[in-house]
Amino acid sequence: MDVFLTGGTGLVGSSVLAALVAEGHTVRALARSDSSAAAVEAAGATAVRGDLTDADLLAREATAAEGIIHTASPGDATSADVDAAFLDAVLGAISGSGKPYVHTGGVWVHGSGTVDEDTPRDAPDLTAWREPLDARVTSGADGVRGVLVEPGIVYAEQDGQVAGITAAVLGGPTDDDGAVQLPGSGAQHWTTVHAADLGRLYVLALTHGAAGSTYLGVNGDNPTVAEIAEAAGVRAVGTTEESTLERLGAFGGALLLDQQATGEKARRELGWSPAEPTLTELLGRLRG
Image 1: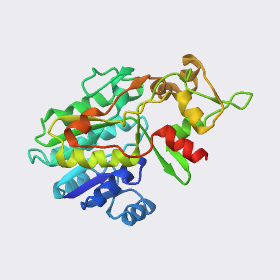
Image 2 (image 1 turned 120 degrees about the vertical axis):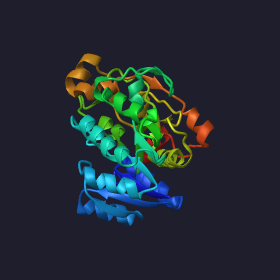
Image 3 (image 1 turned 180 degrees about the horizontal axis):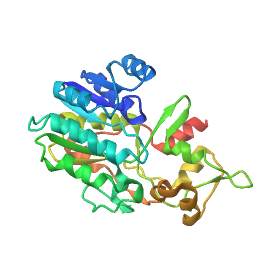
């Protein structure tokens, strides 16, 4: 399949790119800079110079492609507007084609608790903007085979260290005794997924996901934040929810969620089989 991919140099997108190439797909990857273009070319894709705000370019690439996977995001206050404009450009261009389009959401939208794809949304402030965009993807209104993937906390090894949100938390500010200050007490569970496993899920969603489907991108391992710190060998202390929100704002509110999930639907419907080390296993290995 000829696939148009965004975010091909990010933690998620680079793993999606690797999985697509491994399965024999041809990939054209959006690249904002010379360095990004070189990275996606080295990974086996053809670089498409441009960015998420170039509606004409996005429409042309979506029209030419046989399938589209969107993993890029500004990750800031512009994310909602940028993603909405992206959907207008891409879904507008391929309306009625029945082409597969895989969109990136996030498990945080389901709030705290034991969650699955059908859990009613109770999004923290950080990700509440996703709801109308996710609904557009899965509604079928644009006449495409829209599939939504909702990743948990994504991690991977990069340059001998763990990458992703975990790294930011474990490398965060310390108290007067040098202990890392965790978000909240540390007793909250995080849903997790290795980037390589997640990349393979995206490819399965692209090739086999039914129109309107949603899949949690989680491997079923749900460690507590304190267990994550312990596995990394990091001396850490819990904090109050109030201090976490004061320090981290809306991001802190998301990190305070206490979530557990299995990802069983993707296993059952797509044959997905996560095979990479769990987060705590990887941290233990890196710790030596």
